[in-house]
Image (tube, rainbow, N blue to C red; front, side, top):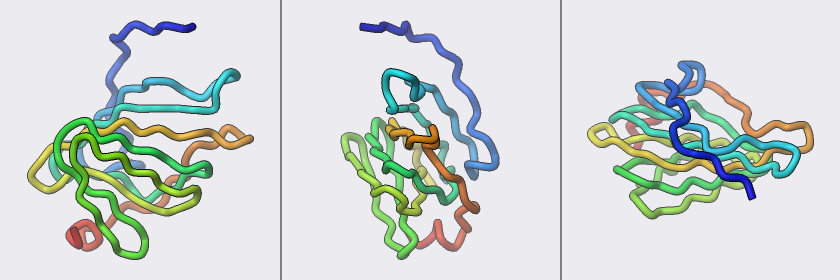
Length: 132
């Protein structure tokens, strides 16, 4: 058993990956014992990810606030605390806060055989975000 005390650094989400103010706290990175990685991500109102995909899929567990998750076919779903979203492997998607509420989630994903967990794409446009 491995135990990690809380107190790790909170970092700003990179501008290449996010629109708006986002903070991230790593929970675990894939390593030699497990391919699973997890991060606690907090989105300010209106903040969101860029389009992206995961080779082994992704699970989102919403911990606070109200947000959205959207797919390339134009579907946007509202998400709230306790909701669990599973994104299929390779499915291009985005997620973030609503325009007037914060949202936080734990993002869980698995690395592929090359250690890849995500491929980042272009930013979600304001038009795509407003479809919600």
